[in-house]
Image (cartoon, rainbow, N blue to C red; front, side, top):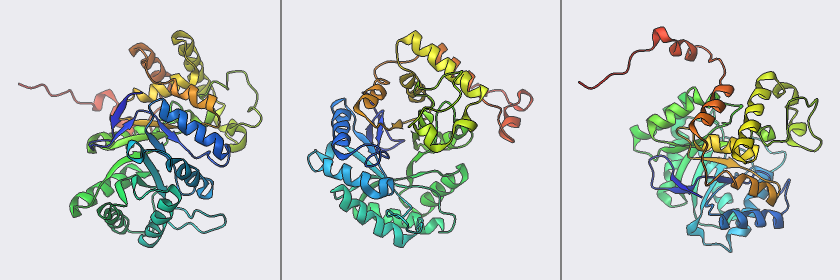
Length: 335
């Protein structure tokens, strides 16, 4: 396992992040603790959760495990936005909810600080200043070490960084977007903003909800029973010629490098510009071990190019216009 810094911070994390959204729903507590043990034994240090995963069960399971671990050796990330209880109204990113939610997360996690506290989704009602100043106060209080965001647009993330800079508040140090071989919209603005501002990028759903795991191949006429693809109803929107072309290339390269398709898809992300760590989830120890196999090797440049080219899609306006040759200027060369 290699290690990377989150953006321009001194926060060092493992190159793979273990996502715990399945904890308590698709895996019971003993199984979750076995996966956490194996992840750490393999060199993993970065663990991501959220207060709404399993209506807070994920945080509770992780917290029970943390009690028997060296807290300082781990980087624990969680998120805030929704209400961690069934049937409750969404609470957003206002001061009152954040202050209540962070204390609840600290109790469930059995820790006195959170390494990375993230706004789970942009709040279009609460003023930017209220959210950012509240997060700044949490860092100053010692309850939180760093702050980040998830599911923001480019302008929302950029404005948040600019306001934090203007007011000398703690800035967002990372963004957690959807990003994989089948979902590359993050490259339009989110990846460039992160690179320009020195923010880390933690990609979620690196296997596209199971589509890049190796379970799906051209010629299938429906989802496998009991899988996430069946549960989320993504078959009809995903089972397209473009998807099968990407999967064909993943399978071909997996054969070439003697790796599993999941490992190839994860490895492509690990070698993408700006990516700090993909967040992978697992229901079983076997799935965890498969994903851990994405470390310790590299795809060759031509293999990276093949995956990138087959997964490219036409750019929407104005991104496509800016990419046209007649509008692209030559690189400046030093005199």
